[in-house]
Length: 593
View (cartoon, rainbow, N blue to C red):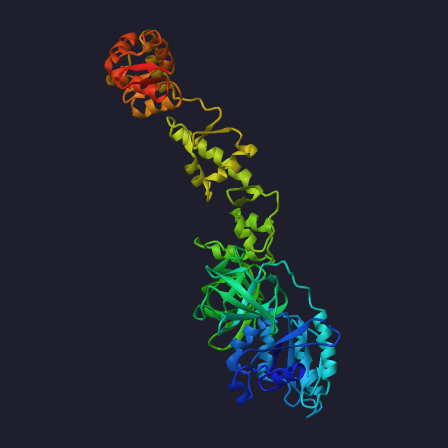
């Protein structure tokens, strides 16, 4: 639980009375009698086996950032108001922060109840709390000096703790660091509140782009392995120096979180604030223990009770849809509203009106990771990215090469592919088909290997894939003019199958490089060498004739058997050798295999 309340209302004194521990870590704090940084203490409540830990936050307005770092990761609050002072400005600011973060569990503690009747302060505070996400809280009046009400407070704390939602022990870890220091002989140690998941000694965790190893752990002063949420935990890390980690950093499960510096969010109004006020262009985003400067781009032109906003962060953070955060005005030092993260991989907004269209698209977003809706909106995405969003990947989603594709989109892609192949065939009639990479570009696919999924669709059954190209299954083959010219060549070759036509004859027939290439790809002609084109069965005919020669035979003998010139015989024999149908000995003679 995190404390909250105005400075000098007795938060640290109350924690000390409950736990017997000193939450103020610094000598300056004890000298000044004012918490200036986060303090930690814990105790075991009557009737409970598990201890409850307190994050004691500063109440002074100059240390709101530290307060938010302590409150951000915890599930409940112990809101403190002094009986002799009542509701104060920092009481309101702390409540604004808790409301913006969506904290719903806690209790009100009225301190210094030995100095004056606490009922007035209690009732006033309850009215303010009721207007926030906390709603109607239980309240206890105490005196840390006399011990008045402390037993009742312990019992009420126990009821609050038992009523908190059970944490997900199998969840992906995201531990927001609130302290970092070194221990002699151990190295770097960080502390934080583990809100979900489980950490074990030896685990590797991501710290930004690097990997660190957990070499030891403590929870509430004792060595533990494993540590399970919800818990205050200290991790001794290997692989990182003290100057490389600090408050606001996050340790996460490897490969399971997306770090983003551009996010689309929904901003709710501040508690009791004016919903028509525009957000400033520069804000501070507070999430977990992090405080990051951000630039605001409203997605809809008019402000409202809740508005869609794009935030560009000064540094990337590991976020997921559904995360709660708050915005503060760095100039006026006020809470601007609570934030619900909607998208951590938003689309680029280039066209006029794209921002408004994006706002309309986000209007119904719940901020809950859902595989079907994410795929339907993105159409294609990496499996690892979907997992990193916190969504469960359905088993029936079409997938290839680590990518997932929205099933409804595949049919549309298949129709577009048929059109692209037909357009290519019309524009390039001599080509053997649309290259696979060109087809992937035409469909805006991130990976050509996704074409296999598209071709498997019924709408693409009219296509044939061969040799890395796509063509219509019922393609007519060569254009009429080329087909006629090739037929003339083959007619000439019937009488003399190895009398390859000269270049001028091919040109007369309109068979230039592209036309000849298309004829070879279509299997209408056989190319055995540069400028040498024969009938498709020329190799078989040649082997048949050469079989009648004594083995081995010379080039001259082969030329005479084939009834051709050296211009044709040399490349033809080389072609047969490459095909493995003849071999050549050291004396340059040839033999059939």
